[in-house]
Image 1: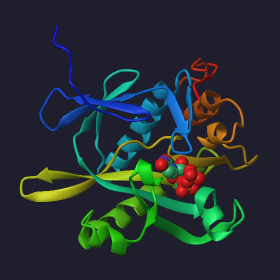
Image 2: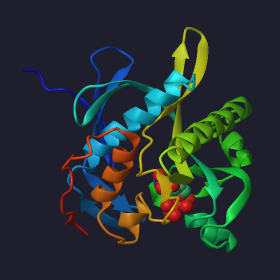
Image 3: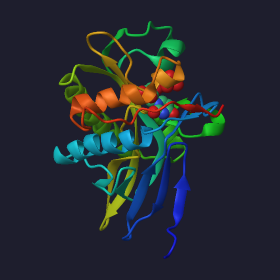
Length: 253
Ligand code: UDP
């Protein structure tokens, strides 16, 4: 049997060549990292949960006309995606102050923001993914002004969709990160949502109790990460309620 070709391996996912040109297989690992990979653990079942949750969010976005890379799920840990040329910028949308925004601007965690705020971070682990402005992005040729306008519009549509979906299950979408890629359709370039949308890349707070149901559970040692993600999946009807993906994390560093 021929061995498939690994195209890329990141902290939480592996990409393999897909069955047809222009496709890739995205494999979700159980690894969790935080603080620019200074903290690393393997959490049983996280990859399975994120595969399902990313499928759920991306197929919902596809259904309302927000293009994403998601084609179909292959198995528990893998999905077929469109190959896209990733723009080297993480796009963050914030509805409520949390995380790095609080540190940077001296805001209290949980403070309401006057409107959704879109930020850009240059993807460079060695630099710790610094905050950059549209000026930097255009000047260094990472994206054009037209791309940026499309990226902001896409990010705000994802925010509206995700906010509504999470509201329906009693969860507040505090902030999230997406990555955006280019695909070519004939002579036309199109921007699509790529990478993943999962509790690894969102902040999700229970609306009643304020309980954190996202990667901050791992970043701040607040409890069982797989249990928190299972709760999100259960509320969304993505996993059967008796799912036993809970496991003890194996701390690597
Ligand atoms: N985020 C992410 N990957 C990153 C950095 C941030 O998915 O490399 C997500 C993070 O989970 C949160 C949002 O983007 O939902 C904003 O993160 P923030 O800038 O507050 O950074 P953090 O406090 O996570 O370092």
